[in-house]
Length: 51
Image (cartoon, rainbow, N blue to C red):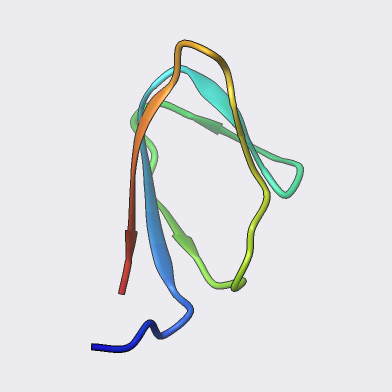
């Protein structure tokens, strides 16, 4: 199986940013850049899955 360069980012709690765009718990992001910069608060939990 190969990685298409797409990924799902699903924050479960906390907050942070992806390439300067703010995310919050409960959102769902489809990431299209091969190496996004993800920053998360120390109390954040999230799921990250490549497709």
